[in-house]
Amino acid sequence: KKIKYNFFVDRWHRVTYHEGGALCLASTPFSLEHRGAFAVTGSKTYVRIKALHYTEDNLVGLHDLGQSRVTDDNGKDVEVLNVSLDPTMECRPLPCKLRYSVGYADKAIRTYVALLTGQHEFTVAEKFIAQIEPLHCVALMICFHGRPMGCYAASGKTLQVWNDLDRHQQKKMKSERMELRKMEVTISSMARVEGRSCYLILGYKDSRVQIFEERGKGTGKLDSVGWIDDCHPNCDIRPVTGWLSMVLM
Image (cartoon, rainbow, N blue to C red; front, side, top):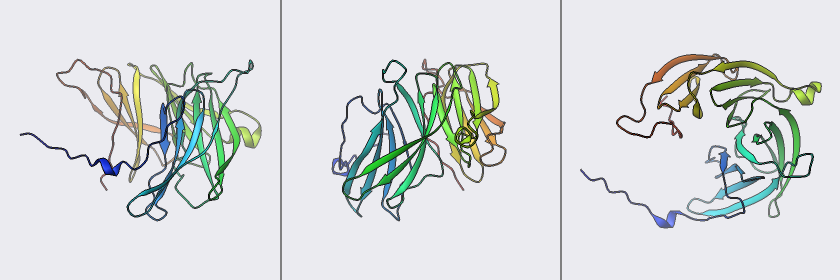
């Protein structure tokens, strides 16, 4: 039986372009109350913050709030690999704060708090909070709940759980690694799902998926609760590279 899909072109309200493309993106949930969302996009060598604002029917604003870069000791821009928002962030009226972390090619994860201000001329005052250097390469990264906020970072077969990304600011020292796990197969994708409990889902290069449950919300302590043995049956494509998850309450 053929399934017909209807794509309504007029629902695509606005397109934004910028140099470097959008290689990675993290966004707050869409707010019905405030009819909008904030997004952090990572391009080749910089991070941009965007605000989306809707009326009941139309996108009335796709605002570029500002961008930031990191340079090395030689003054060269450091490549951006991934971005992740503090899960507690949500769309709110300005002025407000947006906290997020960025994984860079110099092996570091840097955490920032951006103060978003303005009504017609938007400005961003970005404050550097902390830095950790977890892996040979920050291939995958996702933040989890908490004040302090923590993050999962993965590269190759290694998963690291870092706690207290604000500790550098508080005590002038680096964050503490809570846990290091060595997997049998290379980790190819990672997602975090919130419901009555919180789950970390890892996709592997051999087509398997492993599901972990957080032992207490925001603790970063993980218990393996199950596997999906083959996500690509009868297919030559092996790595699990993407996720779309849904929580049924």
